[in-house]
Length: 434
Image (tube, rainbow, N blue to C red; front, side, top):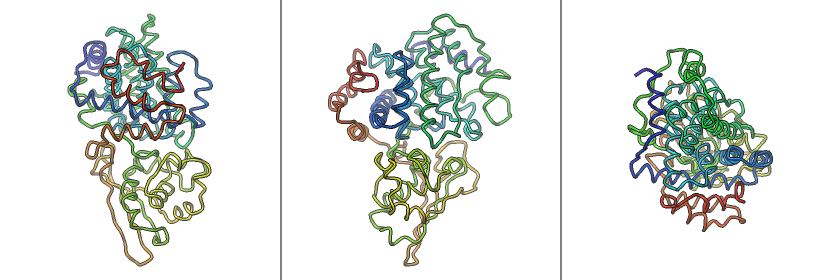
């Protein structure tokens, strides 16, 4: 199948009846709980407050503000095919349509997720490796597909929405470590939703902007090879079935999660005074964005191997409270972080992100002369060590500010598949409640 044929078929699939297995519907429901937890936890984050301050009182404006909040803590879920954080784009788009039933909301979400994943198969890992923030770029397509589904676009209109999205998709990794990183994600939710609205209003566009010689895939794929088609038809199976949707137990860069998992487990047996040196090695794609040795801001700290390693070892956990201006300057944490040496493994890396074949390597040298060696292979929250519904509920409860009725919100989210609309959820989210 040619790329032209594939994306025309994708648009028809996205506009028609979509059936997903029960486990996938359940996982999508968990994604709503998880993403709303991340949104609530960021209510006081500078990036979230700035986005809310300029957001227009429209669907697109609300989606933008929610997406920025959802990504501000770097606590949102992760997806290997997109090499991005899909739910932080898609759930805000869905929530901007409070008239949707709960069952339709889940379907709308899954359509957008499949759009991000299938396009990710086409352009990644080269797209990500040359500097594009895939959450933002591919998220624009996901937002367009989700919003198009919510608006009831037909196949031709859906293809137009995806084509318009191709011209607005942007976001660069150079912003990592700043508030503009989640802002890129907010723009993806906003412009993708607007692409669908424009298609619904009668705008036309060239479909070749997705796959043509000067289209999105050709310009941003990074490989210099011909544009390829995804591995299979949309939804056969959903790529969330193949790769899983990885929830994040720690509010920092996902490429640090496996390291933090290992160090948290070791923390109960180690005191800082026992540690002489810590050596951390990550696969090249991971190491390329973990660039902050001595972070000067909370946003930089989320991408700092030395800081996150020190916190994990010292406290046996990493929480949102560890990423404040006061927390990142704690003398005892700085002293332990100074013992960390971080670099790339320099080894060839799989095209599949966070592949167990590409582990992080951890060595801790103690003052006694003993050496502890670990390989961080699997990520907690992923398909091999998943979080369950109770974990997601606990995460939301821990992130909810006092002004939010967490019990009522949790009840509404647990009832999502049978909800007549989303208003019992949106009314409890400060950024969009009226």
